[in-house]
Length: 427
Ligand code: PHE
Image 1 (tube, rainbow, N blue to C red):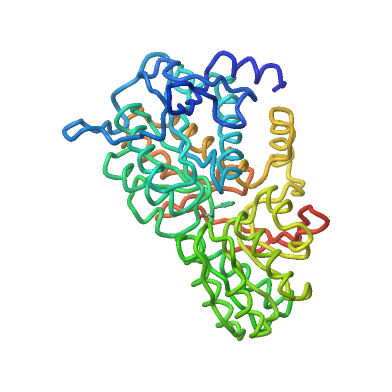
Image 2: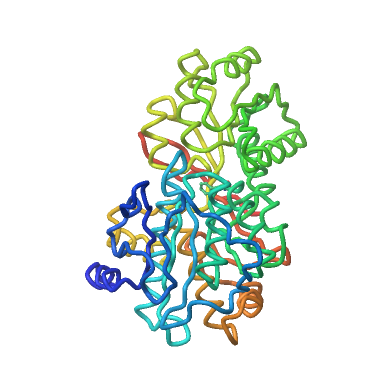
């Protein structure tokens, strides 16, 4: 599809991007909008909404929940999205939103769902779990969406799942990898692998490829994702005969990691596993090198490192580090290269794994809505649950009985401010 037709679709407001309403009542589009998305609120046949996520208050007691069946019909099928469009995880939310928007625009260009166009209502949760929960509540009770897409960070997805499950509204996380997310219940799905596997991947890669014998771990104690990966990496690395010399902790948003890094330095590890998000990891890398932890001690991480900001924040300190991820743009497969070309045309950059998984999550949701006999919550849920051999850009998606996708991971290295594909590891 050409850039023009994508833009035109956006201008027709087939995708509704809710605005962030500032105190005082002026609305401004969420960051990164304007690439084929009409920023507006309450349009596209949806019930009026201020889009004010700051006041995403739950509906008053007694308000009936919409199990994905009633509410805004009109000429559109409304789906919901919750993402971190601002805050320390902003690049996660922005990439994901672009991927979802591209999938929806393409689906609308080829007829939509059951003769209707698809619209997306997006809420910014500012990278906070409480806001993610409030946004999910609004999507369910006020916007009456058919499906919810989101979040990236596992802690935020867990908060949303607690709302979606009892309401009977299907939710698909594009990229939350902590096992607990889909354990909330049978309406909660994901299109990515889970962290017991991701922890195994870096344990195997570091032990076998890098010959790491003694590793230190630095975990974010406020993140379900980080705590899970710490546990799974530690288990496999130890089983393989490696030794964890120390495990230190920080809390998301800290700015001084020197005490923990000094303790780690004292143990002389061969490598340091840091299963955090890019904002913290970039600063940790700089402080580690400033404290004299030598470059020959690589930093290792997981998908949470994936952001262009990692290079800015980490600078030369992050060079030579390795992390596991969902997809590599170097993958020559035609489906990946077609997606990259279309994404570049629409957004002007090479899509990262968040964009790829956002795209996949929307396509799985749309395919399920097409296949379901009707657009009720149970019918869509059942159709999503049957997803099998679905050709995703971040790997083929078959959902298992626990509503998780089982697929390979890639290991990437930071080299010259870019990512270099190292290897693919299968479950
Ligand atoms: N897997 C991370 C989590 O569960 C989120 C993430 C996915 C971050 C992919 C970056 C890339 O919290």
